[in-house]
Image 1: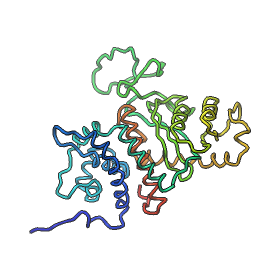
Image 2: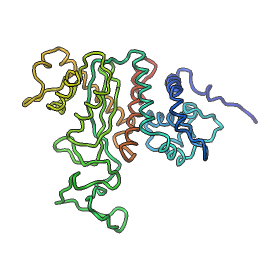
Image 3: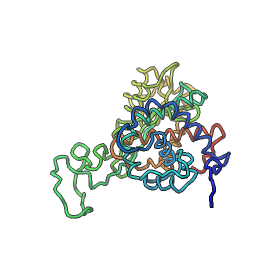
Length: 351
């Protein structure tokens, strides 16, 4: 009894992932020099970086919550095997091998190269502009419990059991005197009055106003001034061919951010506070000011997508370096889906 099965024949000609795979393969082909630098020449065979990156895209697009489940899904699902580049008879990697290779091969630098390739593709087909942007930040919950937030001068005395009872009532805890033993980069922070404090990181994005594509990503410590400093850093990285505008919410209405934008030659379209606003009539009198305040709300769509679909509401990775790589991949996947929706070849309702 003998039969042959072609994965190419099993995937429908009009399947959504066909166009995405052809685009991703073209982007990965342009990254051959970067992959050559990180691929191991000795030791046991590792996961090829191209397959690793495409597997991570599947994890983001289909909301697979762990690498163990991701490897199992690739082994079971013919569609996933075809997308990654495995034949039907190829053995899928062990989940521990996949995790080890991800830590060794997939870093922030490689993720940013892929993100920039996606952005360059969007610029080539003229889906982005170089004039009007919006900026915002969000909290990303850390993979650390409140019990790990201990005094820095604590001797870390061993306790009985793994999950002992801890009473924080009456204790004054702050980031100056305490730190998480699980994730030292996490900070205790809350973004709004009445909200509970949690250990988290802060993610920032710069969005192009033409089609809502993300053009830059930054990960920082969570603090009250992180948003404005990260925004100025991302704006400074933009190649300015014309006078730019940037829309932002009231949290950016401060003298440091407004003056920093004007020093860069950028017009700040920041929502003005009712009192003591740093935005004067020079900005508010233009029609573009009201347009920027309306369009900037689209940035919440990107945050909502990467948190609900991309799994970035609570990161499972420790440290800013790994989190930055995860965030860049999530927003690169968001841009790919957004570009497909604009082009008409991707129906985004299922993700």
